[in-house]
Amino acid sequence: MNRTQRGLVLIAVLVVAALLAFPLRDAIYELIVIPAAFVAWNLQLFYRSFSQGIWWWVIFFLVLVMLVMSLVPQARFRPRTETKPKPPQGQVEGLAIWILRAEKGIYFKWLIANRLGRLAYQMLLHRESGRPRSVFAPLLGNDWAPRKDVQQYLESGLHRSFADFPNTGGRFATPQQMGQITLAGLEIEVLTDTDAIAFGRWMLALEARSSHGFFTVQLKKIEGSWLFVSDHASSAI
Image (cartoon, rainbow, N blue to C red):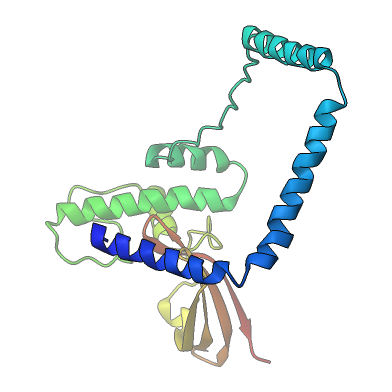
């Protein structure tokens, strides 16, 4: 807004005030002038009801209080100590915590086996110069021949859920005895960024008979990978 516009606005305000002053003079007189005069008259009576000596003592006391307050040191309050946030947990620290907790339950034992199994898988993948390799393939490769118990331990962490750990041995003598399982009606419900649940139906075909039922799998995202945390299956009667 330039100077000319401000001048026009000021003139308009003065004109409006002049037009409203005459019709509102009685209301302004009753609501503002008379109450203000009454308050001023009462203050004058209160001032004259005391002698000048008393007022001088009041002034002296006020000046003395102001002088004392200026000389007294101000009380300093200790700053409130803020709780420092914990630093982000690194991978090495997280693995150390898992190792310490492994003595208290199967889940953390499986987490360690899963981490080591994934590490072995990445090493074999790097040695094979990036050739496609299934994550469910046996952990065997060039210059890599671990003991059978070590291989079973790593594969149990990589291929199985913690509900099956530490059961690393086979339950069936031949694949035919194991049967063939088929899944249908799979539905996945993502609960959070790191939790999900899968529902569906399963059908198992064996040599002599077959069965079917429903299953539920709880998944958890750990370090960028979705892993089985727990599973439940029920068979139809």
